[in-house]
Structure formats: structure tokens, C-alpha cells
Length: 278
Image (cartoon, rainbow, N blue to C red; front, side):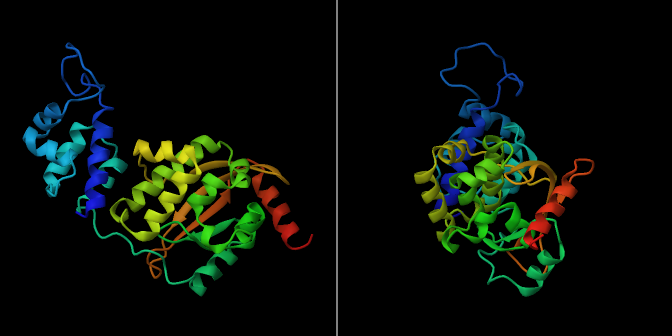
């Protein structure tokens, strides 16, 4: 593991250890505890490793836990599937991480976005820079075409652009969800210069980001309905989908489709008509 990955693993394990109720781990609730959660020696005992070895792991020392040990720690610390996958990635057991930024925006991916008509869609690179979008997405969020290219990063815009904050139906919850998904994706690449720079700038720009980043929350993406508040057409209920083109490594396509029975399809058509000058 790289030094940044070891530090992240150490911080992540500590944060999860403090969240486990000893009773849920089968331990007696009696006895004063100065801090919440499990003690290091308890995690070590329940996971079948030595107290000293586990302490070294939380200290970020250069040791390499096996897949079996990582799985045992995940069970002891009651990790979610997303958290378990995150730790596997940090320890080198989660498969190869995607490359950094894709080389430009492939023409065929842009044509795919354009073919989606009134459904807003965009493409992001591995560090969440927005590489391309269709006219429907620009109508949903006009700022995407206005911000400088260096700031055209989804996570940056979510935490710093007031227009995005107003657009998201529940910004406080939505932004934390975005952050947890971002961390899950970039965990094995925390030392990448683009990721380091983005996190550093966001920590300086947003107290909400700092608190979310310090929480070490991770989560997998899941297709679900999201609410948007558009200044021109009102409330939109959109199903959020994410696709990975097989021939464009490091690129992901995000598509919003109208939720059934919500009236959103008609509102998207209105936006599309405005984009066409109607």
C-alpha cells in the first residue's frame, strides 16, 4: 500500500471502530468506556489477529493485511458492502483502479449523450471532472457551460456553486451522498495529484465538505429517484443512472430519466423546447 492509502486505512478503521456498539459485537455492556465503540484489543480478538498487529494497522505502518484478515475486520466492524469494498481497494484486494482522466471526450460518447434527447446526461472522468454533456443537462444546469474548465468538476460544483445547491432537492443529504460515493471510488487513488488537489481546495472552500470528508463515510452508487428544484419549470423527479462505456476506460455516463407518474417528462420537454428556441 502507498503511504496515503495506509493513512486512509488507519483513519477509516478508527472511525468505524468507534461506531460499533459493543453489545452488537457480542460483548458485555458493563464497564466504563472512555470513548465510544470497540477497543483495539477487542477488534483484534474478534478478528483473530494480535493486538499489536492491529495497533500497527491503525497507526498506518507498512504492513499488508491479507484478504482473509480484511474480510474478518469487515465482519467485526460491521461494515456495509460499500465500506468492505472500499477497504479491499485500499489494501490492494479490490482489483485494479481505473485510470485517471480519460483522454478527452470520445466522439461516440458525446453522440450517445446527444441522442438521449430531453433526458439530461453528462460524462465524468475518474476524478469526477465533467468531460461532456448534452443540451438537456445544460438546460437543467446552465452553469456547466459557464464555469472555467478547471472548476468543471462535479464534486467541486456540488459544494461551491450556489446554483447547484438550489437545484438539489435536499442539498445537505445529497451532497454528503455524492461525497461518500466519490470517496468509495477514489480511495485507492488518494495519492493522485488531481485527487489531492481537489480535496485540498474543497477543504479550504467548504466547511460542509470538511466535516463530510472527516467522517470517512463511503457508499456505492445506486440508481434511485432524485428531486431537483428548477427555477424555470419547478420540481423534477428524475431517476439517476450511471453507466461505464466499455471502450472508454475511466469515463462514466450519468443519465437522468423522468420518474414515472411525476409529470417530469412534460417538464423536460418544456426545457428541451426552450433549448430549441420554442
